[in-house]
Image (cartoon, rainbow, N blue to C red; front, side):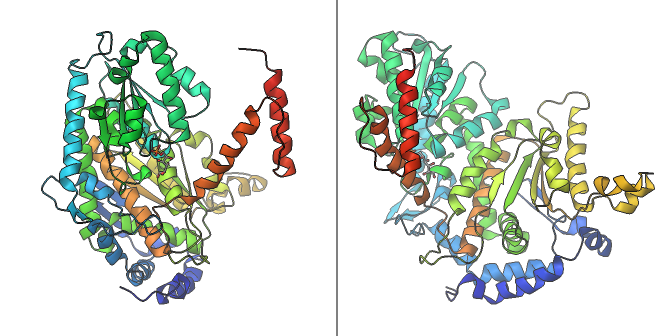
Length: 548
Ligand code: G6Q
């Protein structure tokens, strides 16, 4: 184990600081001019992902220093600790073993003296059997009708993964089943989700690790009422609800047959769970075989992350390059820009994965950090974003490193569409890196007063991930890539990427405020003056509303 120094006292960190002062003055134009091979040399490839990181503001020396920093932070040892099932989530005293969810049947991963891999495969087998029953229509609704609608009720990690994967893999999804994802406690979400559904043909998956989450349990209870209003018999619940959870007692209390509960374990964090039973909706959509291909994609990147030298290791490279901008260039955000319409929910998924994991301000030993940690992830699919926020990335005052994601083959090859799409992603990365100088603008005959407006400074960094085709396997590789980027950065920052205490306070306060909104007469309010006034105004609006 490396000596435990504060990050900013590590020799590589200090060297990077001095080095950054030099690199900040260098333009990507100069770096490319100095090395004609740069565009092929600064690339890496694994599990079908080709990463071009040449358009980043770095040199070989930068990379060496970043690798040295990773070594000094014992990244190698920490990777092994995670894969071995050590309880690296120290604030919750838990192992972090999402990698076990995609381990092959014969693998052995021991947690608390027990090999967890057989359990993982037992759940996958149970999920597969259930999916076959729905697909073959052996499983029928209470009135004997086949299931045509699947509604996943969950939130956060029990929603964002399933919905992202469903959208991403829709090309492979059964079109005879209608999938909906209900998450928000806002009644509008429930109303719009079920408005055109027939209860007799609808199956709800109540997806909640704890089975106590306010939003999910509120929606599940409303769904239960909705079903019973139509089918009248409490026995119908067992035919129209299944659960994904670790809490068998609460599942049974709800009326779900425990035989129809698909379990997972406390060593799977919510935002790392889309490849566990939380993926039941995904498996229902794409079938067990393709779900296993998805898992194989995850596993391929796991193996790569665990074994490849840092210099060729995609998550390590991307994690360290991201950290380089966050810590040494003041970059506060990262744009993730998939040029693939099916990945439209991928940035939203990554927001939770990255920001809930690395939005931390104390080290593992509880000391305040004196360097920036988790950055803001955001993005939209291209080319749409080009007609909206790219302006700021090209000519604004902030440095926004971009991750572009593109595929060599379209799932819908229509005329010139795909060439046009891909020409745009390559063009954007090129324009960001090299820009357009004032002289180049003048050479176009632009009048002098307009030149500053039409000049592109360039030197705006990006990674480009190019894959052959969006398949379940490819999606698995992409998600695992970002999971391990998060891990790499969390290790260097010396933070716990696997807890989320920051979501608790709001929950506690909301539980206090709810009865204050519901009380028939105004209660004694003891909040701050702003919160008190807002509660009073809400109560006025609420009680003045006409009855529904
Ligand atoms: C994820 C978080 C959080 C969690 C949701 C849902 O890492 O822990 O987003 O997934 O709060 O929790 P349940 O699955 O327990 O309902």
